Length: 316
Image (cartoon, rainbow, N blue to C red; front, side):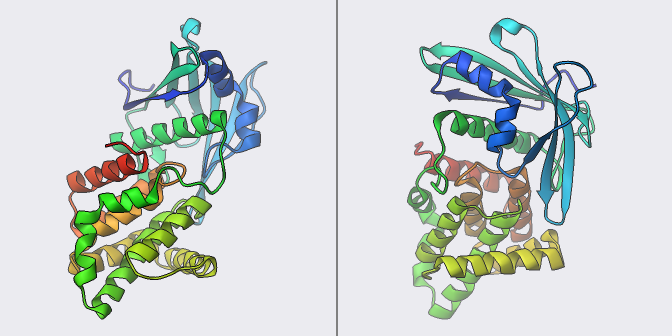
């Protein structure tokens, strides 16, 4: 049984009426057909009883795939449109994600998600999710539903990349004073940290590539075209497959620590992770690995994540 106290709870307001939002959450065929969840492949499974919505969820994790089976059910009380995603197969059997829908005013709905997780934890990607990891996972899930409801333009970065880079001015100001050879070395490791995060969920999408090119231009003084970006994606992906993600993160984090740039490395990783679909738990885990090897405390790197998120969302 899942614990009665939720591991995490998040809320998000969506600019659509409650009935429309509720219908969209229960429209499993739309989620499968439109591929609204980034980094996930959904497919129908045979129902065990009439009317059941049973789905398989597959998530690539470098060279392996995590598979979870779940059902979407209407919970209680029905009057608030309660929605339940209940895991019935795979490593997370017993987990429930519960959604409630409240009409804020005409044309606006607040969706609240709570995660009830068994005592063994929730396996996702590289390990068990912490409370922060689960909050990020639920928030990303809500953002994807909001995007699907309001319309999504592929390749359009979420928020302003330049705003996020400006928010890190206290970490970047010393770059311009470095000798050219030191600046190139720092730039090379900053870019690798960013690319490791970008490909950790199996791909670097258009918005992430936009962020990577912006980081190269603004912080590394390199004009990286699409072909150069593609080449680095392939190179870093191959290196991760050969060496393993933990070993690669240890090397990059240690180099940045020696250059007194570990916090900036975490910041650029957070920017790439959050710029389009919201941060994936795999990306969160990689940022944590970079921070640990770079000597950046958990308090500091989680604050950097929130700082980047606020800048991308134009929150002050």
